[in-house]
Amino acid sequence: MEVNRTKGVLKRIAGPVVTAVNLDAHMYDVVKVGDEQLMGEVIKIKGENIIIQVYEDTSGIKPGEPVENTGLSLSVELGPGLLTSIYDGIQRPLEVLVEKMGDFIERGVTAPGLSHDKKWEFKPVVKAGDLVFPGTIVGEVQETNIVHKIMIPPNVESGKIKDIKSGSYTIEEIICTLDNGAEIAMMHKWPVRIPRPVTEKLNPDIPLITGQRILDGLFPIAKGGTAAIPGPFGSGKTVTQQALAKWSDAEIVVYIGCGERGNEMTEVLTEFPELEDPKTGKPLMERTVLIANTSNMPVAAREASVYTGITIAEYFRDMGYDVSLMADSTSRWAEAMREISSRLEEMPGEEGYPAYLAARLSEFYERAGGVNTLNKDFGSVTVIGAVSPPGGDFSEPVTQNTLRIVKCFWALDAKLSQRRHFPAINWLNSYSLYLDTLSRYYDEEVSPDWNPLRSWAMEVLQKEAELQEIVQLVGSDALPDEEQVTIEVARMLREIFLQQNAFDPVDTFCDMTKQFDILKAIKFYSDQAYTALKAGVITSQITGLKAKNDLPQIKYVKEYKPEIEGIVKAMESEFTNLREAA
Image (cartoon, rainbow, N blue to C red; front, top):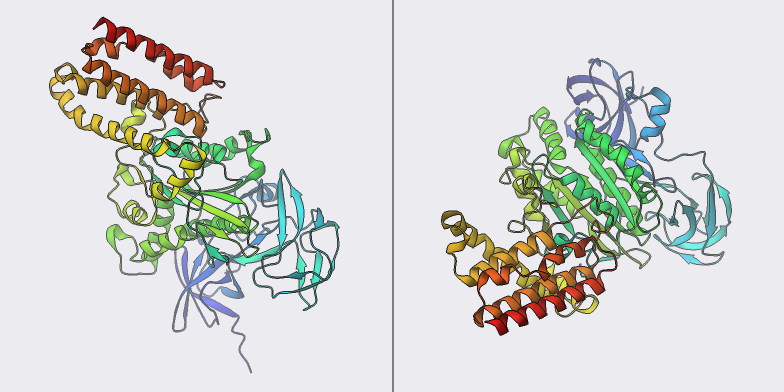
């Protein structure tokens, strides 16, 4: 008599990690654990012992209960209905679960990631007889203000269209058949741990315009790039990520709240639907997918949430969209890895994190990129990961390993936020390795003077940092005249250029032309100031120039061009009078 090996029994339970025996399984198979059929995933096979991480609370289950192997890997449903959705870490729609059971998710409850009943209006863009291959766009569905492109799944063989029809269909109904027998629906599934295939990865040479002056101006990120925002509690990580989600020129936003506190995640879930998309005037949620995995949810699902989010982002990239993915925060994901690793009794690495911490972080960030899709379109996934180092200590393993991987580092500083300087990004600790590849874009699209101007601004800010040590000892009046002017120019850069009000309707977004004009005006003051010094004008007259006091108001003016030209002319006139008087 043949034994049924798709069903085994529980042998051992250690929190979210359980061991089953008498079960045929492969790595990363999804299994149903216990009488309540809790969802889990095979993460280790040791002889007869099948070790499983369970995505739900395991309290109350006991050895001897059944374990059933589904034979499938952890996958997400991809198709119309993703946008505006709010999911947990394993793509269960929270809004559907709330209707079923209220505010607290019961164990063993499942719900499909997409509505299988809702009908969508499908319009074909190919016809019978056309040759199609994996990634070919066969039709479109208008989902919110975004056109959802229906593609041949990457794992379907090439063939000719045998039959395709327009009309109103659910995501499971067949909309297209190929001559090789393949049947195409609007939805397909994809395993979250396997990156979706592309034709080629491209050099990151187009910036992601964020509208934040300190980012676009000093530390730009490319489309398809990677960035980390580390910072202690209260330094503005979430506000910065919300500003990026709202204003960056990515067409789709995927926001992963990975292990965040419940009150912070509640804030995101209530604020995001209220945010207005400046491009369309409609709610920002219409081009957003939210994945909410709070710190009190099971830790195994926290790990899955990161892979779920990046897979959804890759799906929209394959349509030819620019996607920005916000992971807030990867530290909580690493903590989940640490807990699972300790339950598996693996050899701990630094601070108890598993030895493969760096490899897992690399796997995640390397799925970012600007690519030629299978359909030969350009699409990109830009990954911006927040890091929450304990006590703001950037030397801890998650921050250090992230820094080795990402090419853009935006260091949030609690001291700056305490001084009410926002965004509280420290310009001395931050960096971007995309400057060289993006310089050509800035030369052509902004101005040939942009790159030298940016370098000048960074030099002034670094010089100010050196002088501040002397100022704290002896006061600014003891400095030579030239260095007093340097400190005044640096103050203007900090207060006019780097500080930005996220809540002001005009200043919340600053385009590249305005950024260039503001920097140019500050550089004009600097050049005139040093010329006046050489002509014998005293420092107090230079720093007390009246016209420059109007410059900060430019940030809040929409049609600023005439005003900034007037201020520059007034500064020139004042400097001329000072030189003549000297």
